[in-house]
Length: 255
Image (tube, rainbow, N blue to C red):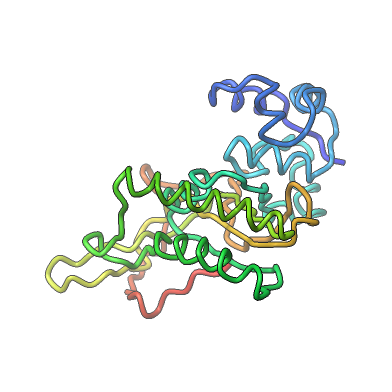
């Protein structure tokens, strides 16, 4: 059991314009659980992770400072991402479209019966999947009307797959990353070790058996956890003084 930072939970909820009831629904818990979280009581880490996911913050931000080190070490909370089952096509598209980077994986068994619906949804998500190393002019964007049509089709396929026992789970988390910049002389994307680390939003989408429940928890190895003694410059995190350069061919994003 982990002690929540009640004041922080309440502040985040109110700044997001949520009532306790709405946060409870989005976190798939009851209102009493939200009330207990805002009172700073002990809750299961999975519950706190679900609340953090609904508030779109790392779980470390809603854990009591006094117990944070102990609890984060015990449960490896800095690597936890809670994925909620998605039933809306537009919600799934927006998670992918609005992220800096991400990962799509399938843990469900493909079958002759579900393969068409599976590939229909996944291919559209892959088409829109962000790539930090892609030049701005090469980004694929959909008009609002095209996105709405795609959302309807994806929503229909999600329902078909759920009837077959397959579900889509999605979540986002905050990471710190060096963002590639474009060299306007060569057109190439690059970073150096003097490039500042910036906070970005990454996504995880996993296709899994519906029997997994309303949410699943996965690990991501690049979740940003605020340091206890921050040491950063205005506009970004401190980076080493000696400069090296990386290109798209050298960069690998892992989860």
